[in-house]
Length: 293
Image 1 (cartoon, rainbow, N blue to C red):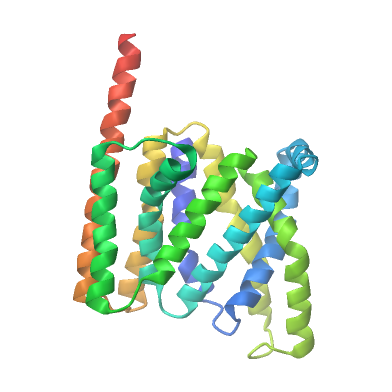
Image 2: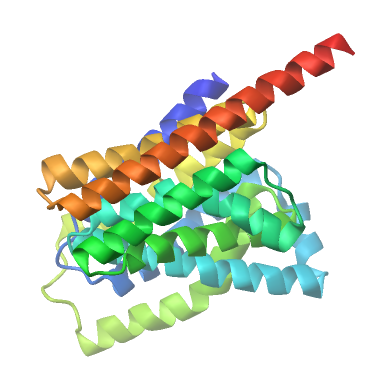
């Protein structure tokens, strides 16, 4: 059951581009404001059902952790905004690259922020991934800023979340609560100034409202699965989402993959094979050592 929950979480994250593509008439910033507001309402229900209010109360009494929540809220809002903008403007393939790079960037940040140490094989994987990004930049003449912004913002978000030590659902609830007032003001501005490209239909409103539950559901599934599914398995499953996004970008949205970009992706995928393979071998060795003891 736990593996199924993890699988479903990554599948849902993988189909996000299809969902946001259904809202071409709504600009990215307005979508993100709706996503924050409706996510907050959904999360309030989830927090109540999971009895995580004590975690919220503890953070409100700790100024340092509260400040970390503000930083996390800012980072996740940047990540959401860039992702939705990329989907709406035909950069699904490049956005998938960001989530392929993300696991390795997490490890690098672990070295820089938490004094963790990397094995030489892990450094090799990271170096190959960097080479892949460099090839894309040199061959296409365009720096993959979307991919790197998505990867960096999400990796920093994960690092900050590690410091807040809050349950996933309560943490996101706190972050959306911080962002909600500005989001409501922005939505009021859009409504007053009639910035929408066309009148909202019932279907459009339904999609905007459902953006909250759709954002929350995979997080709840992930949080439930992460308690019992081994980290190595979770690490392998996390490539489901960007793989789906890449496939959608190429096959469904007909985004072009130039030779330079194809070579760059190949290098990044090679890095991921080395990176994940090393993680699996290390995990098996650790399990064997524990069984011997």
